Length: 72
Image (tube, rainbow, N blue to C red; front, side, top):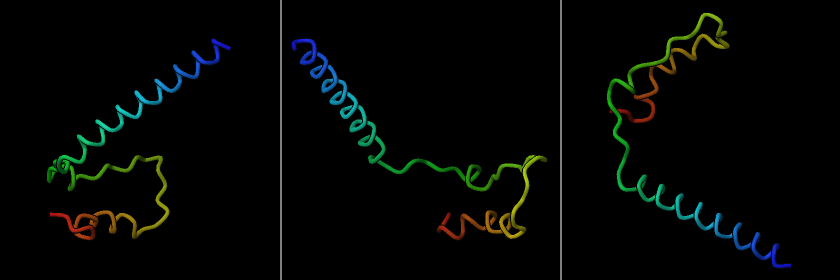
């Protein structure tokens, strides 16, 4: 019976440690907005030659994405 209690205590400890780490991580994210540079917003990945396009209008809508979501 003691082994089960030790295992339960260990699992609760791991759970509390994980919760504390996630709380600290979330608090650091909510301190301020992440910096976004114009280069990262304006650049788009180049499609590979093996990728198939399902729609011709998807490339145009992706190019207008910053203005559609209120980009700078």
